[in-house]
Length: 122
Length: 501
Image (cartoon, rainbow over all chains, first blue to last red; front, side):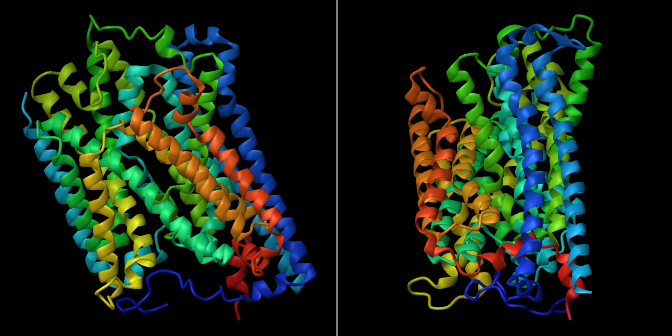
């Protein structure tokens, strides 16, 4: 990395050369490396699918809920009609909870993967 | 009624934006600073910057106005604009950062090693960027007219000029600072007047009631067309966020994949918190008998609290609205000029053989701001939230399949990507053109109208299908480095640091 104040003439990543293989990448060409990656990829994809699935079953199911139970529109919660409370208020903290849970699990998957790699290399 | 507080507010926001931009210039000496803030932006700062950039005039003014007119069915817009970040967080954030790509075309080229894919992506970035910029400029015109009585061409010209100076002068680092500042400014500018107005309303013994029951609180019409429209909007916003050029650029400024995830989580909280406010304005507007008003947020303070307090509050919301136009426009201008720099101006223009990197960036900045400013003055106004919604539909129909399949599917090929991008792009752009001609609304219940007003529900699956089928048909074209590249996308950086010799 250049010292502060040095002029570095870079306008973005170098697009003309292929990514330089890192040590990590070399291992990936072996059967074992391939296995590591597949397991991490599968774990992360499964986690993402769970979170997006929960999102669709909760927030994504709201339109159907209001069509199936049209009476909800006339109900109120603390004086405010249910649609405003559920769609306009409750949804937002729920999205943060889902996101927070995902970040924790994704980082745990990665640490587990890192431990596995180091164990096998030791 | 006096326009003085509003004029002062606009002047103040403009001066502060330019001052922060100029101050940033001293910090950004090198062109890598210009482009990506040298990748040193921490999650807290970056989350505020992403949110500041993302919450455009559509969120600040457009949503409250549409909620007032159409009621609860508009709530899906802010919900989708927030939930899009959850989808982005789970499927895209960390791998995109680890790809090392600065823009979407960079990602496409690195993943597929194809200049053709890159050029298609660059064209789409510019198209989506401009599609998103035009309503910002038009909204700025309406805002200045409502707050100060200025002619409607003044807004686009002022926003265009300020953005140009801020972007061409300071690049990304100063923009990061400006954007983070503008998130908090926007939140304050919407929160404080809302609190005062609600207090005034609650203290009034003869307070008018909202009368919220019935059609105004119905979140969708319970027929097939209503369900289609709602789900199409949900699909466009949930999947479109990841394909917005100004959002993607921000991920490159995170130090690593984990920071990119934490940044996105911060954005979810900041954006979601902001969206709690527009319904309060809509409800108050309804209580005080406003029927239909594109600048409800600006007009409500003076209506509820006449006199000096009302004028000052109007000044505050005007400042927030102006900050919203400036921040989104400058974010888009940075993203569009980044792509134009790499793909057009730095390759040299006829008559000018060589240009320094910074000159190329500045020239690109001028092009990326002047074109949408002129378009805003010439094109019909669709209504800011609807027009922005169409930009989401285009992003969801093009970059969403490219990113998801590029990150998670090894068999993606360059011909598959190009075919999918062109199909999704053509379908959604046709819908945009149709909407421009029809004022942005379905004028009848005819299915053609419904399908073209909210195209995402058919264009997104179509783009995915074409991308997958063509990739499977061109199996021999899977890039040789696919495996290596996917390893890089999904491997934690910590591992590489520890293992470095």
